[in-house]
Image (cartoon, rainbow, N blue to C red; front, side, top):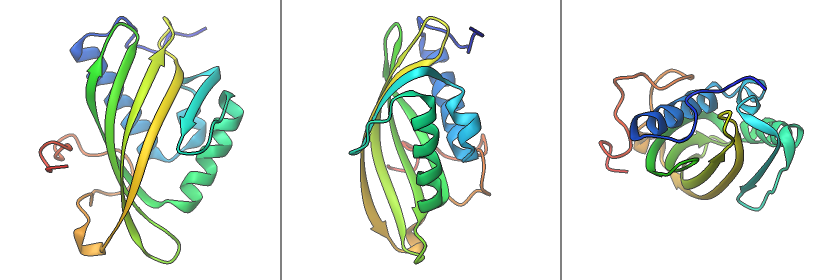
Length: 155
């Protein structure tokens, strides 16, 4: 199995790097790219869905990004230990009617020694917002390095 650095045990620096790499991958909205960081038998909890394995995760992501249009995400390291990372995140998106949402969440991740995520537990709440309340305005794709994070944005 190919290594996916940074590898556990995590330091503050490598945990933050892993979080930013995950954020960049998710902002690509490319299920083929995103699933490669998970183990073949990864186990998730995402709201009321419990996908198991890369195939189910891929299908989940395809459905997600078909519904959550113009998706832009910011993740922030909350805590870490040897092979686990806790993250808080916020993302903005709109549905097919044009209604914007800001989704707030927390994730708990567990990694293999090779750096693959084997477990992802997410809790997420959505809040409708007006288009003029949006805070994430960068072009679709990775958040620019100089764009404010969650704490700086007061989120």
